[in-house]
Image (cartoon, rainbow, N blue to C red; front, side, top):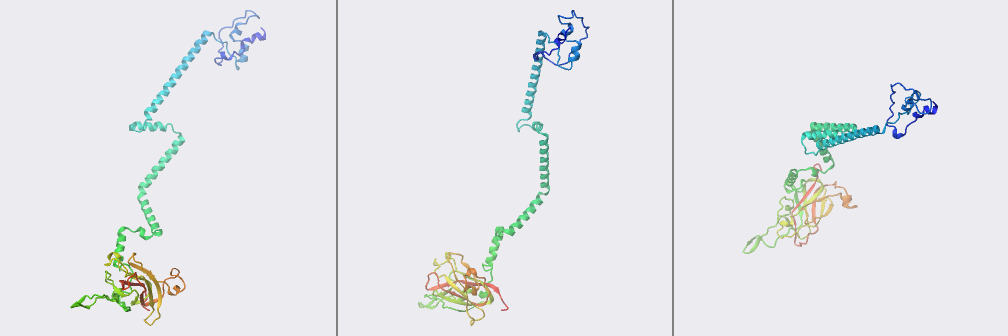
Length: 381
C-alpha cells in the first residue's frame, strides 16, 4: 500500500461534520485481511483504525468518518429536544423568581411576615461590602440614640446654661427680662420718685428756696367780702421742690422770664437735673403754653457770695416725656467745645439756680411743677 493510500482516511473532515473531538474507541474486532495490496482501500483504512494512523494522529484532530445521514438526523433531533427542555426549564425558573419578587418584595402595606420576607429578599440582592457598610451605619445610629437617651437631658441642660451665659455676655440685659421682671422694675422705679435717682433738691430732705423772682397772682380772689376780693390763692416757689405734681399745683412765675435759687441738701457733684411738667392730656386749658422752654442752670460752690458757674443751657420739649433729664457737662470745657465733646461735671455745687429764659407763648406766667438735682454727694466738702 502506498503512503498516499495509507493516510487518505486520516485527513481532517470538514467543519460541518466535526460533531465532537472525543477520542474514538479502538475496535476490538479482529482486523480483516486486505483483499489486495493496492486498488481499493482496506477495512482498516475505511474504518480509520489503522495502527499507524491512530498512533500518529491520536493527539491531533483525526476524527472518525461521519455517520450515515439517518443517524445524523436522529442525533440532531435529540440535541434539539434537549435544548428545548433546557429553555423551558430556564423560563420556568425565571417565572418562578419573578413570582417570588412579586409576592415577597411587594408594597409596604403587606403583613409583617411578608414585609420581613421583602426585606430579606432585598438584602439578598445587596453587595456584601455595601451591606457591611449599611450595618455599621445602623449600629452607629443606634449607639447615638442610646447615648442621647441616657445623657440627652444632661446635655440639653448644659447647652441651655452655655447659651444663657453667652446671651448675658453679649446681649442687652433688657432682652433677657421676663414681663414680670419688667413690670416689677417699673413699679420700683415709680416708687423711687419715678426715676430711681436721688433728688438733692427735695424740700422734705432738707433743701430750701433761698430766693426767686416774682410770683404771679390771679386777678380774681378766692375769698371776697361784699364782692370785694380779700384773699388770693397763689403757690409759693417751694412748690418747685415738692413731690406733689397735680394740674394747677405749680409755682406760677410772673411773666415768661424768671429764676429760683435753691440750697441743696448737701454739697453735690451735680451730674444731671430734671425738669417736670404735666402732660397735655390732663391740662385743664388743654394746652401747655405756660410750660418753660429754654432755661439755664447756674451753680455756686459755697455760698451766695461765690461766683456763678454756668453748668449748661437746655430746652424742655413739650409732647415728649413729662419728666426730662438733662446731663451736666464740665463747665470749663463748655467754654471751648460743644457739650457732645465735653466730659461730666466735676465741680462741687452747694447752691443751684434754675433760670427760665422763655416759655411756649404765655406772656402772663410760667408754671414750674418740679425741679430735681442729681449727682454724687460730698459730705466732707
